[in-house]
Image (cartoon, rainbow, N blue to C red; front, side, top):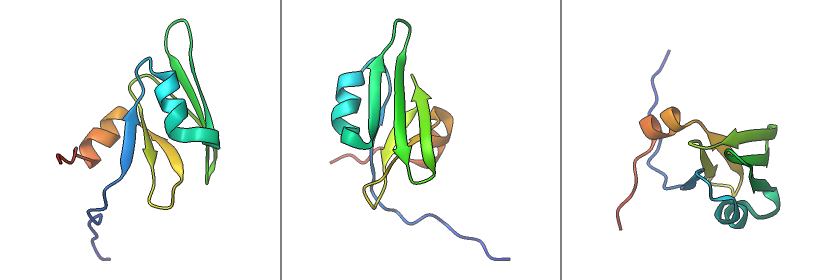
Length: 84
């Protein structure tokens, strides 16, 4: 067995927090985002099928232009913000 480390490839991402319009602009026609009474609901058409996410989760734009949701704890343990 071998061990591997993720390559340091910058990605674009946005956190869900009552910002459906901003998320919709980010994902375009790859899904939908709506502000519900209690939270923001996002549905994304991914390479693996349709996935949903809500407040706190992140939406990631992958290296091939694909979008997918990522739980807050996993995102924050895997990625760090790049300061320009």
